[in-house]
Length: 264
Image (cartoon, rainbow, N blue to C red; front, side, top):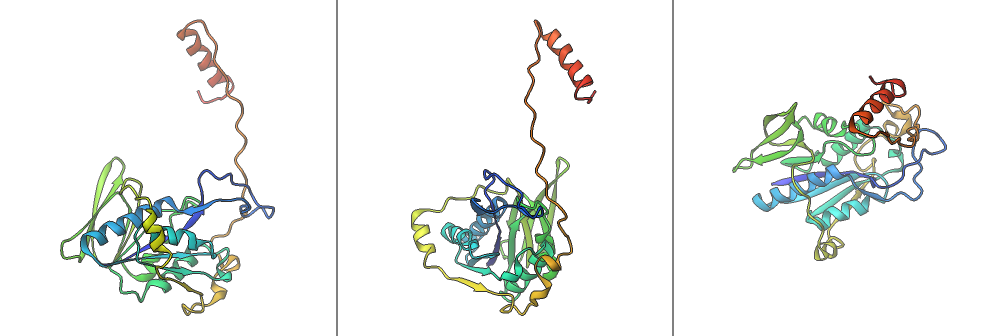
């Protein structure tokens, strides 16, 4: 089974994010970049399927040269090879353009399954997976917490949580699945895995290599435009509700919620 795992590099969730002077992007100085957590679930599931059915796992990423670090992490986890789509013209591209470039990078790989995170923790849009499936003309099974491949490797069955219930989806391969938290517990890269990753193939491709027009990418070609980024308002200091008894405290809290917070 040939499986493709899409990897995005995002700021670490513990990194302090600041709005850049242009007001439409984030300041990148001092940011620690990591593999998107939802993509980790996708990489792990790809490796588990490989261990069961054999084959190979190819990780594909898009962005500047630093994305190589996240691809090497996936290789250290056990993926076989990697592809990085990198081009200065990609800077500022929206989700639709990203999906178009990824589709061009993988369309000739004769894959059985594509795994990706259900969303990136940076833009939080959840559009790339669905768009990639559309460009490739394959089924899309979104936000999956359980995945099973048939014994003959020709179809998959997946569970998706919906309003407290479980929706069971089934599709013939090739197909694209987006991973949700709960699908698995991603493994850590071992020291031998890290050493082996340094020797595994990592191919770089530009937009020209993929036969794509650079004018269709970047900030100027965005269909969805960022007008302004603003930081959230600073939190006010908390208030301790005083009282001699639970009843007095409850009454004081209710008064604060009515008079100051105006929520009751």
